[in-house]
Length: 211
Image (cartoon, rainbow, N blue to C red; front, side, top):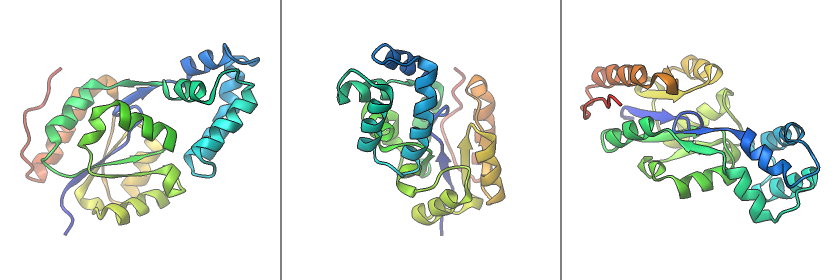
């Protein structure tokens, strides 16, 4: 019988991200302006995160599209240097560890997943996850949620889904998950909703972090 669990998004929940500074740095090594680079890479990013091309193919295609003057390693460093910690959420995850299963569900690529797991220790708190690039589908499509339910053996009625995007929350609601739409600017409100859910499921946890 599945037990209560938490299913958590990555981007703008566990880490903040911003592609614009990376595009500026790429533009400095390209004949294209940053806005043109973002336009080019948006299409390639969709292919990458849906598993239609590999990370290596993405790097090759992107370097060609942007006429990038550096090495593959240089491009990868710039492409991955878009993240910053959400320390408030990290504290929350730390206090939840060991209390119930923690899982990830993210629209991401192998490049970013590998970088995040190697760079930020918070990801060591999670018991597994499903990622769009390997699932071949992405949120908000119901297909990736259904695959997540099957692969992780979770019960939507027993699972709290946390995501920052309304479309993803809508699909999860339709499939029977309890949901919280996360806003990093109002982390305390999230903590209060989380605590209410945990009390309902009789999960004992350490006190809410106030900072």
